[in-house]
Image (cartoon, rainbow, N blue to C red; front, side, top):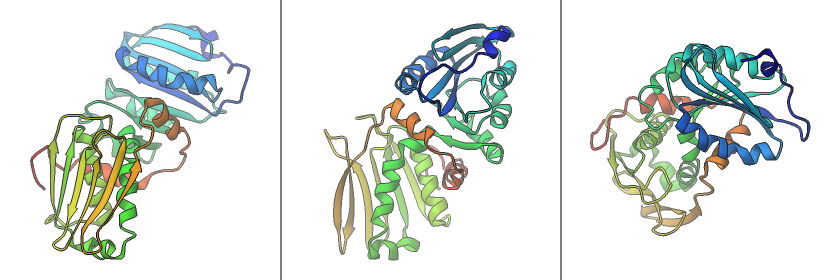
Amino acid sequence: MSANLFAAPPPAGPALVATVIVIGRPERLDAAAEALRGLADAGSVRTILISEGTRATPVSDVEGDVIFVSGLAPRYINNAVASLRLSSLPALVWWRGGSTEALGGLANLADRLVLDVEEPGEVWPHAPDLFDRAVVTDLRWTRLTRWRSGLAHLFDLPHVRAATGHFESLTIDAPDVPAARLFAGWLRSTLRWPPAVTISIRQVERASAAPLAAVRLAASDVAVSLRMMAGRECLEAGVDGAGGCARVVPVGDGSLSSLIGEELTVRTRDVAFERALVAAREIQDPETHT
């Protein structure tokens, strides 16, 4: 890497709002680059793509307002980020996988650390140690926004709210099991469930881009449900029992570009996510109960 590359000024044009540093294996950087292209074209982000490898001196390139750093060994990633980020802009690190060796140092450099891995079993245990260093979240949490909102709105109904301390079971059908665990962790931590509340996660085949397929939260006299509607990108939220009702809401744009764009608008620490993640780690695999 040359000193000139590290000293490169931001491109002229519309004002930048953040530096987005994407880190991961090469095969996962292409989709991220495409997702950020529209944001970069609008002049809102400065993009740095770092692929993991074994080199101490990686191959580097600049294309417009995008910097490519390829083949960098994990122990050198923090140095590259420290050199390439602009102190005048917020820095969002988008972690798309690879060695967790650099995570601690990245949290010290990032204003926001967005986790986004296919199997989070290796990275989630490290997250709680990072909460006091940076604003940490997971893109699965962003994908669950409409699901969380749809369920939360049902608790505006008096008879649902009255059942808050009496729910006995939660069943989630999901193609994305970690997302189901995170959703269950959110409910467990928010509603302060005792161990007696049964949580069951059932893995199902993916029928859409949605992280979950159906959710059912049951007490003795009322049940609350959310489900993806067949053939539609809509979520049906309903209440069974006395005073039952149903409402349909769109699940929104779940594209990678939209999701990371949403993350760029967030600056504050998300305590609800932090508690949900800690609780999610205690929830077991599909078809098991807690």
